[in-house]
Length: 288
Ligand SMILES: Nc1ncnc2c1ncn2[C@@H]1O[C@H](COP(=O)(O)OP(=O)(O)OP(=O)(O)O)[C@@H](O)[C@H]1O
Image (tube, rainbow, N blue to C red; front, side, top):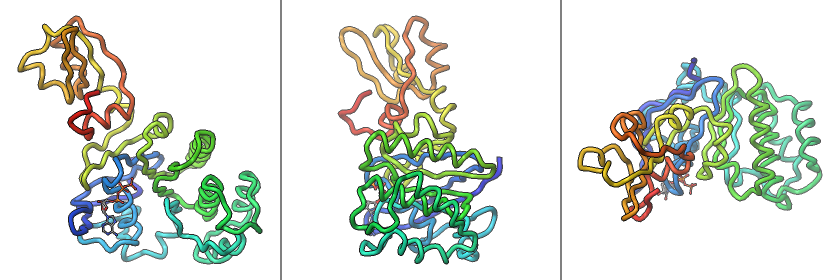
């Protein structure tokens, strides 16, 4: 599968935080979920990719072209939804659109109007008076109205109710139906990605912990429960997290096959993405 975006050794440092040597590619035709707890580096990564933060090192290529050298052209192929205001609050939706649209050579007013209608937004309303959900919908309408090939969204679901979140997922699936589209979607609400993500990248403390297809990730991890007789110094190493009580053990493994081969009378359960994520980054008190 072709890579739409290639990030190599990307580094952006703040005093005692930031991102370091990030390597990943976004594959064409895929929704990639970018997950991690608050402060893990998701926004920094996205803003550095978009050139809103000056990078300290590394390269970002869009369809093989260095982002920095072809910024204007590449940006018209990318739709962006950021989690914090990049709108002028005093403007109406119509005025804001008129400011942003000319920046895109392939702006399509018909697509924009169709989304505004679908979302039941009023173009004469002031940005400042929009609810969080309406604001997100307006941002999406803008992001998809210039035939972007890649949508980059930073926490688009934060603060939204479940119904609006579901609507957003449906819009993304619709967007993906057209050939050659890709989505990069950051969130700490992993349940949003259960159904729609193809690939998951977990970031923690500015470093990538895993980058894998969702199906492979869910297939190789498992919650395992069974009798304590199966737990010894050797088998303990098969678990990312393990809790033992007098009644037995419960653990999460990243190597289901090895556990299957070494323990014959245990129960396997499919973990959620959140359970897997917390197995890698949860604090000491978190077990499963
Ligand atoms: N402009 C900045 N100046 C200094 N430090 C920053 C700046 N932006 C981010 N950081 C720090 O970099 C780290 C990563 O922050 P970032 O906003 O990228 O995390 P995040 O994963 O997007 O978190 P959240 O889910 O809360 O949005 C944090 O420790 C943050 O305090």
